[in-house]
Amino acid sequence: MRQIAKILWIAPGIIAVGFIAAACTPTVQIVAPDKPIEINLNINMKIEQNVRVRVERELDRANQANPGIF
Image (tube, rainbow, N blue to C red; front, side):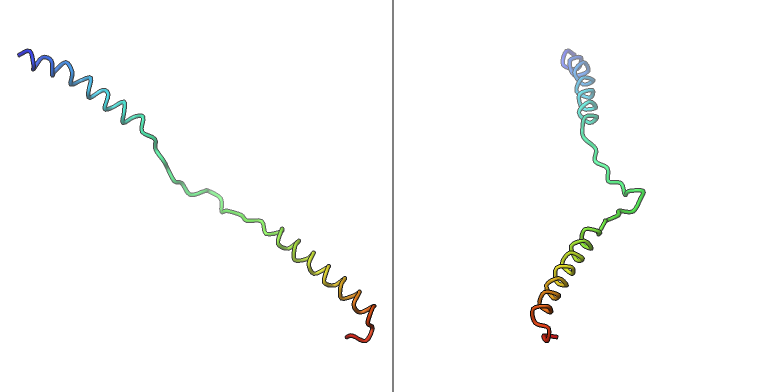
């Protein structure tokens, strides 16, 4: 009888600890964004334009140094 009373007294505590431990577990949710992802590629355009300007300047210098090259 004493063991049954002890088990009936301890069991609710063990169950309560189990519920508390389950409530403390982290939850990770993956949700798709509402708006589409936008990638700005203007940086590449500026680099390409900068390279083109440098090449044009070098070609102008080469043409002035050697007028008959082209």
